[in-house]
Length: 475
Image (cartoon, rainbow, N blue to C red):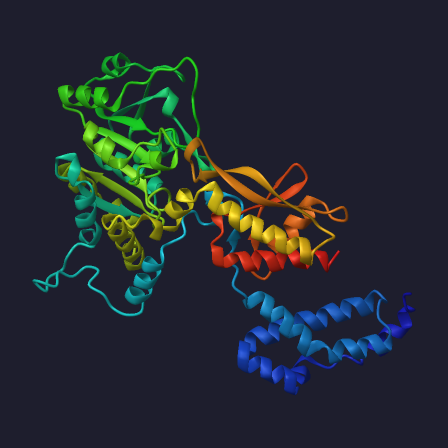
């Protein structure tokens, strides 16, 4: 019921001035916590909102008085919402191990401890402790990569930039600016966020020279395209899609042989950066970094936060001469990473050298068996049957995926807790789980919400259980 316009002026007189509200005890406490300017801005907005409601005739006298009384509480609520962290921890129950939207690879406990130790104070990020002179930050991880790639039978140097797209851009710019780069049409991929290899190449200043067709490219196509302008042969790993059927692609050994005969470097954009042999978990067709180097690739780029299981980074590994040339490029400084990334990467690589693969969360998730996940899902289902009889809860067979543009055709047998309700749709259940105190991200299939515990840590099972139980009390 709206008030007559003449009554509005009397209601406006009930509103204290903003300066008066600032002097009230509850508001003074907010000023000491959030600062004068932030509280002042929210008070002005709140009073403005109340004025607007009065102008529309939406408030009675008692309601205006209540709104004034509620001002400290409402301003505090708004300040808390504004000052809260936007980036929050979440529980990944999707079964997608390297989930791009959820930050890809979780870091190991050792990496987290080492980051904290290094970030807390000063470090020798660019100091040679033996000489006291300025050092190179690359050496903290290049020495470890050299050990990991010792089996390839030649010297390998590695440098680090902020992601693989940057690594590709920098390498192309350093080695092929103004010249042609030969690449198969079937490898002109688009990765997440609409970043396309032809666009990256154009920005690098190199000229794309396409050869072959989408499904078939032969070694002869590369050889015929080589001319005096050719600076690189490029192989791009099709990490986020597959081409099957009537296909042909020269092997890396064939490309390396051609490159060597013609005196042209062979570059590979490997993308996912696999050191661990995924064949041990039933995933085939994902090449390792060492295999590419053994095949004769001169320089390659890959990610740190995908199959490597470390922080977001772009790695450039190859012959010392070529990597040194890339390092001298002025773009390298613009794309380099800080001490925390180096700490996380160093800790991750040391874990590989110890062959302690289960300490790397992404690898541990890949190595989990269907039976191990099944035991956890069965326990959760039994508890939910007791605590939430109104919900339909069952354990179903499902498939987990690697994600992050890695091993696109590969899946891992898994189990999931499937939740549905006659009173709530699956999308509503998924939304409520996302709004839990620790957001829980699930997937919706066939009208059910699936919670694949492969990608949730065992200590998170209780959080998931409580969140699902809460659904039954808020129908």
